[in-house]
Picture (tube, rainbow, N blue to C red):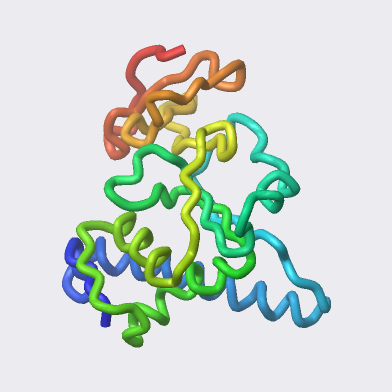
Length: 194
């Protein structure tokens, strides 16, 4: 099987959580394929996004994404906080890119990848893009306007996890009174960054 050096899935809970994310993505992809067959349709784009995402704008229209060269084999990811890989918090996939990127669990478990020593999930996913011969388009925040947030405190306040905030992001009116959480587990907000 391919290598994911840190954290090792066989011996760490973090590694198991990573593999669980890969497995859930693959399950949903297989359900999508079944839906396509049942409805006799083919999706042109696929979006994966984390459940702690905070949208502060509209994603680019699909027509703009599909008009790009090699759209079917393109992986769109934000050009920040990629940690030597791809920012995988929100990714748009062209139809031909969706299969290999959403079947990473099976490929990992059954040796479908060559040895890919990776320091983290982001680097592993970049290697998966390269191995599958896909095109990576690292976009500006305007294309994929999302960040990571949670409700904390009593009464609840919206806090953006500073670790995932892209420095060049402009929050605009949606996040006028933005608060940052410096550490997720602290469960509190710090400072006004409007």
